[in-house]
Image (cartoon, rainbow, N blue to C red; front, top):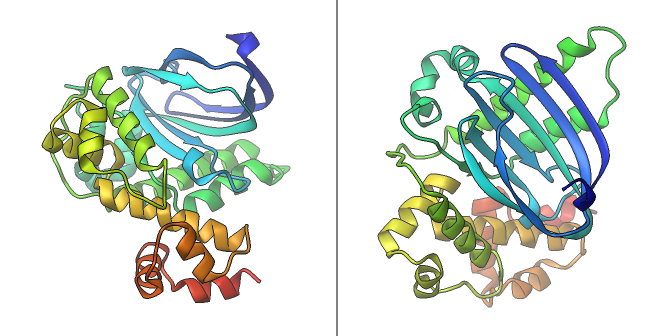
Length: 283
């Protein structure tokens, strides 16, 4: 596997026995798969894995995944000349529970040892800003370790603020087949922003009935299929306006909107402001 990846940068911090953090940049030279699990050096730990969340990473390539040290799943690393940039925070479940205090009950699915879990969360501006502060800024000359420990906890604070918006639901054990199938669905959902994939096509791709597919999708990604699609569709519209310098109407048409009033309302719902105002702020 060492020949399949070029590691360009790696830095780690350990605050044993309850916390560790590392960030790295690497390039995948050849597509390969391997079992993935949280590091075992912190007992009963949970890994929060942030991928491509700084340097304006491509919308579809950014992800936050959380899974316990006991969980293993198969990851596919695809050949790509673009560097992959990751930050990981590994934390003892007991320490995390003490950090959350009375709010821990809301996230019981993270601490229920009767099953393993895998969840994925979307990025927020606070998460991206904090990671950039961790990765890009020079470490202070004094109390450097203390600084990075506080930053790791700040990052988790913003992540849990985002996770707290998920609706309460019963989490069920997922097989590797379920995980693999639901990521196929996710990838298909994000394969075209101009024309959504039909539920019938997604059901066939997943190899499961609609109710199960929707339940697993919401359990892993924290929102329904339609909301997930619209969220990333509007993120792509924002990117077209911000980076490609497209006009509001051009961005709307490119992602499949024929009615610009509908596009404006949808953009405001998911981005937080009307596209015209967003466009003016990018000049």
